[in-house]
Image (cartoon, rainbow, N blue to C red):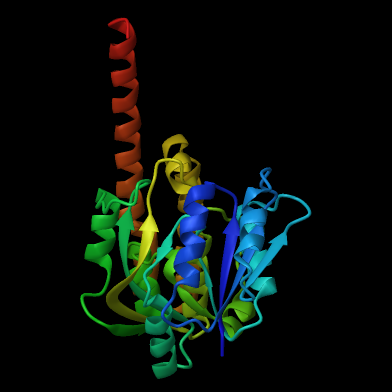
Length: 288
């Protein structure tokens, strides 16, 4: 059975080409790539995809710009396979990604999501390890494991150590829960904990088979600076603490109330923004 690789697109065309190429060059070729264009103004991506003449590729263009949440929902609506990935249009699959996650799914057919190991690259494809990603590495399980229920939710409330574009999802489980409306930054975390609440499980294997691109122009980076990210996160964690308490998950409720990693990221972003303002002011006073 093919795996659907859903790729919401709106971004850098060169990185998009690299992402698409990494999908089509998989050692396991049994896949369908669906590019969902969220009204990008340049026709080049569509033209380039058509030139590939690959029957596994489908191009879909939204009638109106749906935004992050809306386009993710659109991707899920278009899935026809039993398992799917929602891959970033600037990320890179290693050649054995699909073979690895397919094997894990075969060993755990009732799992809701498969999480493989991930490394992080910058705009130029160089390996990087920003503080946030080093923290993710610390928070992630130290070995291959299966998490579910309160244990899974508690782990993710402490800090979301997963990388959404690398995750393989079981279609039936995701459609039963769905993305929560109104979320842009924590919609992936919300889906994961909703799956945990629905008795779903996450299978983790630390073997690195995916490269996540981290750059300053990303949605999460931009919104971290102006505070919108943390406004959304604070509301989310407050609601989750209440839900977990009502569900009888005391450890998860406590982790949601603390959301220590989110608070630390907020502090780091505020300090970084202040340092940037000071540096800009010094430069201007020096006449540069």
